[in-house]
Length: 137
Image: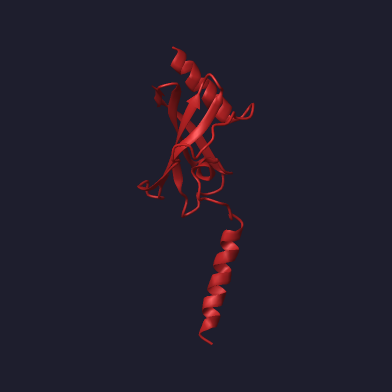
């Protein structure tokens, strides 16, 4: 009966992780801000690259009353904005372990991601407006 502890451990692991079962294989999935997190635009990263404006956003555990999960992964998301078209695209996402060390970077290959207009009233729309105003100045 050596298999029983393995089965119990596997069931416990799948039960704990099932609530957060999401697809984290794409940069866009990692770029999404989840419950308990806060995202902040880094205005020092705004730069013009041809017709696009690049900027970065830091996503970390917020000031919620819930304690940060032990295996929490903070992220730094690089966006490309087309101010004339009013669209955003995730270019890359850097992943950081709980101690703050970078351990992985996901990059969207050219042509793999599509730019889209953020929904009105979202923080992505506010970032787009802010970086486009900064570029005009």
